[in-house]
Length: 367
Image (cartoon, rainbow, N blue to C red; front, side):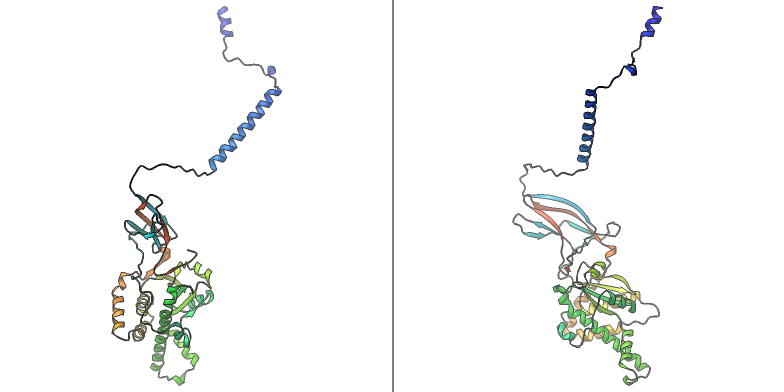
């Protein structure tokens, strides 16, 4: 009996009956303070987790070398390799462009690195204007402008009515654009001269003389025979249009076929090189049943720009480098650039800058 009583009384998990529990004011106050404290700590910890802070530390470097090696691999999706440059700034504040031990690879629209390396164009790589054009832009405009000034509406009309359209996007403050202006106007004049030549041959083949058609009919015939429509757009006056066309530097020469953009011209900016480029584009994009119109352009351009032996040598020297330069460039295919390599900079206060520069164009301010 005693054993059973002992087992019955052996209970290590006894509990107090509910009717014996009683709340007190002191317990309520302590409980309230505990809840407020936990809520406050939860709020402060959450705020500290999502907040940002900048901390710096200063340490003495025991290395006695005056230079430090900086390894970098940077990808920029909105800066083309053509404009990306790396400059090292010395302790005296002098800036030096660096190309050794630096590789640049274009990045496509999907962020994938291309296989071929890129380098910045140098001043002597591209002829910026045609030195054989001796007339000033004012003299060329004396009989009217042949390179048509366009806005958004007239550009759309030109693209609708012409198969091939070549447009110079420029800024009136740009020195490279002012240097190119006489060359561009001469190219437009050559296009109209070639069109007039084709129109005259067309009328002669039908046995018609100049008295058999009106001036309006002749002008329409010239428009039909125009090989390439040459236009220009001032990006200072039409800033929004140039931004939509992704203009990042001046001058930018864009070529259109049937209203679609086919890339930017990157070759020599001379009349003969322009005509060779337009002939290549016509061979590439014209239909099988369409007549070739740029043959007369080459003849007129030769008569207009090659007047002596020095001009002929000048044209020959440029043609020798024609295939070494990529004439067209499609921004959508290569919108960004990956820069990788290493630099040696001064320990203090040496640094390096990655910025946009160009020796052949003036960069747009919105770039």
